[in-house]
Every structure is written in C-alpha cells, then in structure tokens.
Amino acid sequence: MAVNKLDAVLLRKAFLAGAARLESQKDRINELNVFPVPDGDTGTNMTLTIMSAVRAVNEVEEPTVDAICKAMSSGSLRGARGNSGVILSQLLRGLSREMKSNPDNITVETMAAAFTRATDTAYKAVMKPKEGTILTVARGGSDKAKELVGTTEDLVEFLEQVVAYMEEVLDRTPDLLPVLKEAGVVDSGGTGLLECMKGALDAIAGKDVPLATGIEKAEAEEKEEEKYGFKAKLTLKADKPFTSADQIAIEKAVSDIASFKTEGSGSEVKMSFATDKPGQVLEEVLSYGSVSEMNVENLHTVIKETKPAPEKEERETAELSEEHKDIAFIAVSAGSGLSEVFRQLGADLVIEGGQTMNPSTEDVLNAITKINADNVFIFPNNKNIILAANQARDLTEDKKVYVIPTKTIPQGITALIAYEYGSAADDVEAAMLDAIKEVKSGEVTYAVRDTSVDGRPIKQGDIMGIGDDGIISVTRSVEDTVSEMADTLIDESSSLVTLYYGADIKAEDAESLKEKITAEHSGVDVELQEGGQPVYYYIISVE
Image: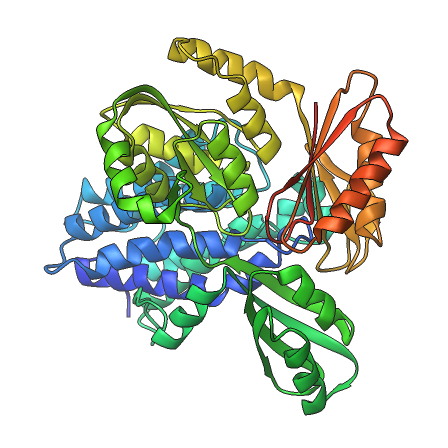
C-alpha cells in the first residue's frame, strides 16, 4: 500500500523505529572505528544522543507533527555526545525545522526539502567538514531525494531509493578517506545514520518493527554500574575450547576488581564485565585466546565541583553558586588524579568523562549553569567533545562561553597554566590558544584488533602510542612504547616531560619508567603524576 503523507502518529513510529535499529547495531558500529582502541564509541555516542530524543518524544502527551519535531530536535541537541552524536542532532534539527514548517503536508517533496535542510544544518555545525564521513552519507541521501522529486508520490518507494543510494555512498567512503581504506572499514557515523534510515523506512512501510522506549536499565544492572566505573563487552576466540572451569578461573582471578560474566563455551565465548580496571581484566582474558568485538563504556559522566572534602559538599555548593566571578573554568577529565590536577590549577568544575564516555551537550550546559560568572572557559580535552562544548556555548544566553579547543589532557593543563589573573577574557582566550600550540601529547593504550594505521601493521594486544597527529609507536610492552614515544616527542627545545599514569599502572612501575626516561634524556626534567585514568596506561606531556 502506498504512503503519500506522514502524520504525527507515523512520524513518531518512524523515528522510534530508527532509534531502535540504531541501538541494536551499536556494538557493530563501535567496531568500525579506525583506531583499534578499546574506547571506540561512535555507536555508543549516536545511540545515547538519539535515546535522549526518544525520551523527549515519548513524553509528548498529545502527538502533533509540531510537538514531535520539537521533541526530536531539543532532545537530541541536549543529549548529543561526541562528534557523531552532535552531527546526528544537527541532522535531526534541520529535518525537524523543515517538517514543522509544513506539518500538514509531509509528502515526498517536503521530505526531500527536509533532507536538504538537515544536511545543510549539519555541515554548518562543523568547522572543517571532512568527506568520507557521516556528512557525506547525509549529503548523498539529500541529493538523491532532490533528484527523485516528481518521479513518485509514494514515500516508501522514495525512501527505498534514498536509502539504497546512501548505502552506495557509505560503501564508497573508504575511497574518500584513506584511513578507512587502510583499516578496511566504512565510516562508522555514516553506518549509524544508515541504520536509522533503515529502521524508519521499515516503520513507514508498515513492517512490524521494535520501537525505542528510552526506558532505563534494570535495577540490578544499575546497582552493578554504581559499584564500578566501566563496563565492557567482548567476544573471546579461545585458543582451545573454553570450559566452565576456565570461566571459574577467570572469575576468581578478577574477583577483587570486577564483576564478570560469560555466555556459552567452546571456541567463541561472549563475555561482559564491570570494573574500574578494564586493562587488567583484559590481560587475564587474553591469556585464553584473542579478543574481538570489544567495546568499553564509561558508566558515569558526572559533573563534580572541584572541592576536596565530600562532607563539605552542601556548604561549598552554596558558596560556589553565590560567589560571582568574572572568569571561571570547566574542564573535562577522566581519572581522580587528573581531576585533582585541574582543581589545583583553578578549575571551578570538572566534568568526568573524556575517553570512552563523552559528556553530552546537556552535561556541559548544566556545568555552565552552575557557575556564577560572566565568562566561562571550557576545556574539552578531547577532540570528540569539542563539538558538544560548542553546542552548549551556542545554547547559553546569560553568560559568555569560550571553548578552548583542547584535544588532550596536556593541552587543557597547559591552557589553565597560561591564565593570568586579572586579564580580560578575550586576552585570556588568546593566551591559551597560543599556549596549547607549544605542548606535545601522547597516549598509551592497547589494540583490540588487527589492523593497519598510518602504514603501521598493528596486532591485537599490541601497545600503541598515539600522538597528536597519529600513531607514534607500536610495541608489545607498555614500557617500550612509552620509551619510543619519549624519543620521538622530546627534541632540543623540550624542557619538561610529565607522565600521568593510569589506573592499571602500579606506582612503583611508573617510578621506574620515570627514572629510565630521565636517564635517557638528561636535558629535560621528568615529572610523575598519578592520573588514575582508565584504559590509557600513560598520558604523556612534553613542553
């Protein structure tokens, strides 16, 4: 049966079906990230973004096209996480605005115009749009939609052709981005968008499809999540048949640091665990075979005031809200040690997040609202958080917000150090932008799959050193990777190296590594700081 027009009921169903399909493909989308790091999170970010909109849509008591569109737009904008999530929210924003302008006549022509407006809105939100990404797939869909106007009045036929062409464009993304071709994957964000479109198409075509509800997790899972900070899912490809005895052995080995579950036995076993030390648990699992389809999620993204004594929280919250300041600072950080560094340098609020779980636009907005200051500076400290911070800035009306585009923790720390008390806000911004150019950063973590990046073959379990511009070192040990990174990053102009060691590193091992680098590079000072960050063994700063 042909569908020539969308009403509020069918629009709502299509959106919820698209969200449900995206959620069902979350882990597969995460696996498409180019870098084989354990925090590939495109699918997670897009799902959390759209689920924020799902909750808003499901709260609409009397569905109208206008009400549904407003909920889709505002819910996704505030819930947007990561670059992919922000772009998805902008696509929904443009789509909703066009449909709201013609709510009683959402036909093929209106839908084509909505796709074009969605794509234009998303491109404008990105300072330097890159082809071969979700933007390219969106543009392919809107171009095809314009081409089809006048050829059919059936929305199902129209969307089938649009979706088919978007899939063709997605398959071509490796030809537009060499890093995708080298890694042997298509764009992860584009894949997420395509899955949304497929779910919506199925609903409009009248198929029996699941609809997203936005309902939170079961109480038992919530209690587990409150105990630990990270949750991981993976597939173990066992070297020999995995048995119940092996399961008991792993559970016993990690019982002090994790809640561990397995599903099945034999050569391929699904595993999940909640922990504060995912690296240590993974090392135990890898003793039984190789790992694939791994995804690590940060279970808590919490705004914390940078106050040292919990028992003073209520009083100090009042002090924070009452004290008016000219300039205040918000930093995104993962790890108690890193958060403490930002606090000591003058950060007024710390948003716990960063790698693995990017804070949402609303998380940043809430932090901005909490601060009583005329000018608020935000340090995202991760390239995947900058767009969300910019979005929060654009939604703020009662104070001026400056987003310093810090892509790493060392850049954020350097920016704060550059602050001179009493300087005008615009001068502070200029000084910070200059300062972050002078610091070099590196992060050390493990590879979750075989691949090739920047011409370097990488095997699962390798220890990678990732610099500001890509892979610097790949070895089989943390110490060798850090040492090679130091050799690359330190030059004749370097004077200070700081090592921030993570939750999986023992203090004595970090001290030993510091002494080794000091001996190998006598012309620089080497400092050691407990960072407490998960997943990343070390974060390195060279100035």
